[in-house]
Length: 451
Image: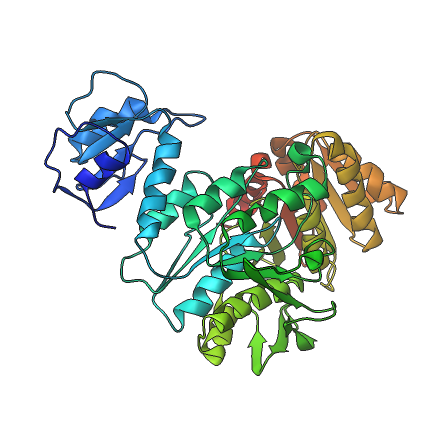
């Protein structure tokens, strides 16, 4: 991005003490990585307050700092605002409005990151495309993604996440999407929102800023299929089973590694990421590419070449153990998807599961039902870790899993002490839990034993 400093001062109605023609070449919220020519926003987070690092940012040749706390700072180029997060979003919106390219917003309960990666890859095969790195999808991450879009790019794909109602609306006001993609309506954050209906309402806030554009939905989702188009946007429906689809997966073949090959339109796609649910994610991405008139064959090949990000269904063979590292995050729906992958292995199947968070009043029942789903799908061994481990156990036993096949541990250190005595060479082992559970630490038993 390139913006004159004077325009930023005007945006925030601030008094300009520096040369208004000074060029701002980027935005940072991290004084450790800020580059000369960038503007620093002092954001207060859970663990740190950016205001404590304003002087360091200015010493690193930041052209200015945006603050909400008045203090003795080392330079004159301080812009005072009431809310630095809102200011960050306001500047991102200002920059986005200067870019006359299609912006694609991707949201939903599950599959956002994979769908964003598929979409970015599909478009990049035909156009100069920028898209969210990692999962910078929150109230600060989305503005940073917008700032990262190059001024000569031809398309931008932005992932948008949420914890509460109103957040997607706020992010959409920054992204101003031309195309919105909703992957599904699940139970993620149901503890905050109370019901799937409320989650549906929160996710569809993206429509508030979709003007004369396209909404692409997974029509196999019971809630999304009910959305109808109107004068503001056209609805494009993708899926496998639903009626009246614009893009349907046909001739589906399950491959030996639990990936899938399928046809859509005149294109054959073989996915590299396992799980039948990824067919839907691929269809959503293909639809975006087709709407923007990207080359279909190139888009399909690019989607097929995508691999998972770290701790997202990463499959490795470690000295005779097949490990499915899906520890990045978890909710009830994504747990079922991961179990669906695990159940297809012919080896002995072991599920190492940590707590699912943000379930509120649904916490006990969701863990119990996950245990039921494990047993129903004939998973051989359950290793349950955390405060909800007994709920997993109860659900599994209610559906017929023998108690001797279930191992309960209060925390990860306890689990790590015993896991090597439970698993066997040749096992396929799923490791999954919410981000706060840090289930990737279980992998240390393999790394410590084999590296």
